[in-house]
Each structure stands twice: as C-alpha cells, then as structure tokens.
Amino acid sequence: MSQRDGFTGGFLAGAIVGGLVGGVLGTVLANRSRRGLGDGDNQAFLEEIRNGRLTPEEGMEMARRSLEDKIAQLNLAIDDVRQQLGSVQENGSDH
Image (cartoon, rainbow, N blue to C red):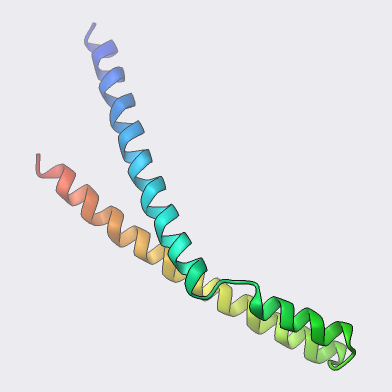
C-alpha cells in the first residue's frame, strides 16, 4: 500500500511541477517572441533574395548571422527558465 501512495504522490508532484515548468516556459517564450523573434527579419531577407539584391554568399552570411542571433536568444530563454526552476525547486525543498 505504501508503494501505491508513493506513486500517487510522485505522480501528482510530477504533474504539478510539469505544469509549472510548461507555464513558465510558455510565458518566457511568448514574451521573447513578442520582443524580437518575429518574422520581420526573415521577410526582409527573403525579399532581398527574390529581388536579386544579394549574392549567394551574402545570403548565406545573412542567414548564418540570423541563426546565430536566434540561437543566442533561445539560450537566454533557456537560462531564464533554469533560474526560475532553480528558485521553484529551492522553495519546494524548504517544506
């Protein structure tokens, strides 16, 4: 019977922590997308390629820079979530 109680408690704790993680991650990513992960840069980039204003080398360089910027933004979002999860776990271990 104690294993069953342990499973139920663990399941509920996992569901609650998972919900918190999902909520925090969704909020952080939604805020970041509003601030700068929009498709405005991509649209301008595609338009320049279509109009022939960029050489293939310039296009590749712009694409590389754009990807590096997005990777940096995602890394910041991941770091923010880690910090928030760390504070949630510290608060949870106090009980």
